[in-house]
Length: 133
Image (cartoon, rainbow, N blue to C red; front, side, top):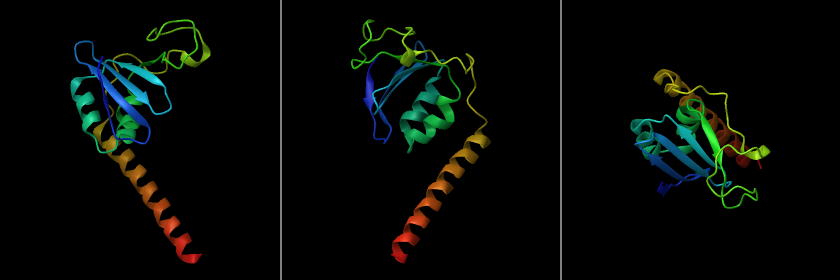
C-alpha cells in the first residue's frame, strides 16, 4: 500500500486501499495502525482535512476497528507487516465493532468546535500570562 506523507504534528503518512477498504496511519511516534471498513469518502476527507489529528480523533479512531502493525523498529520475531501477534505492544483493538458508522455529523461538528475553543482558551491564557510578565 502506498503512503502519502502529510503535514501533521502527530501523523507522518496515510495509506489507503480502496478495494479492501483499509486505511493505514503511520504516526510520528512510529506506530503503524490499519483501520478496516473505511470508505473512500472518509479516507479522502481525512487526506484533505486541514487538521489531520482532529479528523482522525473524531471520524476514524473511534469509528473503525484497527490493528497495530509491526514496523521496522519492532524487535519482535515476526516479519514487518505481520498483524495480530501476541507481543503486548501489538494487540488488536477490539473495543470498536466492525461496520461502525461515521459519527453523527452534528456530533463531529460539536467535538471539533470544543477542540477549537479549547485551543483558543489556551492561546488566550498564554497571551495574558505573557502580558503580565
